[in-house]
Amino acid sequence: EQLRKEKQEALLRQKNEETLKRLTAGKDADTRDASTAGRVVSEVVAYKSLNDMPLVRDLLITVDQKNETVLLPIYGVMVPFHITTIKNVVSNADHDHAYVRVTFNLGASYDPFQKFPDAIFLKELSFRSSDLRHVQTTVQQIKMLRTNVTQRDKERAERANLVAQERLIPGKKVYKLPDLWIRPGFGGKGRKLPGSLEAHSNGFRYSTPKQEQINVMYRNIKHAFFQPAENEMVTILHFHLINPIMLGNKKTKDIQFYTEVMEVVQTLDGGRRNAYDPDEIEEEQRERERRNKINHEFSQFVKRVQELWEKDFHDLGLEFDIPFRELGFNGTPHRSAVFIMPTVNCLIELTEMPFLVLSIADIEIVNLERVGFNLKNFDLAIVLKDFSRDVVRIDAVPSKSLETIKDWLTSVKIKYYESKMNLAWKPILKSIIEDPDGFIEQGGWEFLNMDKSDSDDDEGEEQSEDYAPSGGSSEEEEEDSEDSDNDGSVVDSEDAEEDADEDEEDEDEEGLSWEELEEEAKNEDKKRGEMGEDSEDERRRTKKRGGGGGGGGAAKKRR
Image 1 (cartoon, rainbow, N blue to C red):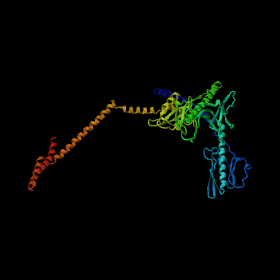
Image 2 (image 1 turned 90 degrees about the vertical axis):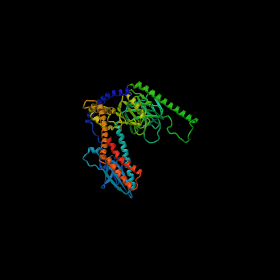
Image 3 (image 1 turned 30 degrees about the vertical axis):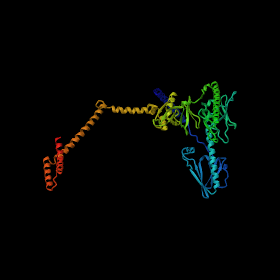
Image 4 (image 1 turned 180 degrees about the vertical axis):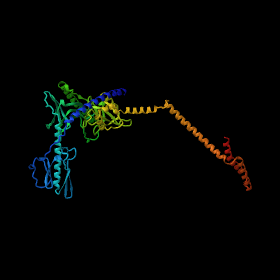
């Protein structure tokens, strides 16, 4: 524990210097790019002239699929609206009529609004029709056209940002791995079929019997992983790319090829089997042999590709990483709880989508949040060096994995902190970007060190307690003052009791004296004798009552 703390303290100064240098350089680069950057507004034209508009006999809502336009009747005139200007369309039926409400794009984020800020934009139009069937068909056509155009424009925009890849050069000696599935999939309809992965001279090619294929070039691979099946149902080859590629209609930076080593879904029609059933034991043996066979085939393929990389692409430094299971821990990076494992260069989770691939070189610091003695789980907040990216969160990590994670972070030279609550990272990173110099002057990342802040508060309290105006020992003075207070309270109570006794004595002294009481008793006896009730017992009681009253006062006087 002490050695780990010393290493973490040594990382603090280095991390603050790296952060300041990177933020200062990034700030200068942003100022240079800001002058040349501009907002691109796409030009949308429904029809170039009135002659291009279709002839519509009836004043009905009409969809022009060819020109991607919707014609709306307004005051007896058909007015064209391109489908990109329409935000939504809904219909409601009311007895014999149907109402159609068309909502248009509007607001500051709308591109034409940026180009024409002084123009007046139409927000919504409503129509009523007695033809219910026409309304349903038209609304459905508008929605389908809008979906297709939006998807096409999105795919076009993604392809426009793609980096051109080199062409695949077929190798003389091709290494092949058959019966593989791919994630993400190619998309489209129909039954999905497994394919084969081939290692060529400068890249991989994956192809299926349906003539679907994808190329992964060696120079576009940032990290490569081989995860044999041990506690999982699949054996995995995973590639994290430098530049994204199009797979189907989507852009991705992670592509995975895998094989199931056993059936994920098992039928239970046969009912339960005995644990010592020979068929059950034989089936487990077959599954074990199949898993070992598939792992061996993947291992041989990885070995041959690694030799090819070392021979022809040694400058890339490519290497297949195998995760360290003994350092793994459970957590929830997205929606479900998964088993996360570190590798030499990354922190990964490849079993479930979306994948988690974090390069250690991209991590700035790690904050362990909700760490407490009575909590079963805690959270990981991973701050990346690119502050424009969101902080990566891994929630619900068991507390038993805390020490393992601390040791691993220290071994890979990543500075970590602990806190008892979750932090709002967006405003924190924003303030750091705005004033990096002030951030470093105030201690840099040490504001996350809760132990240090608590110790500073304790020192402040001790200093306030040690302050003594008379120059004497504060503890002794406090003890003396407490003793004096206690002594004073005892004396005061005794004095109060004595004062009470004296008051009682004064009250007794103000009453009858001893002689007066005796005289009164005698007179009482005479009266009772005259009435015939003079008895020895009553006389004794009378004397006793009279003596008791006077004796109390006399006793108090003598005391």
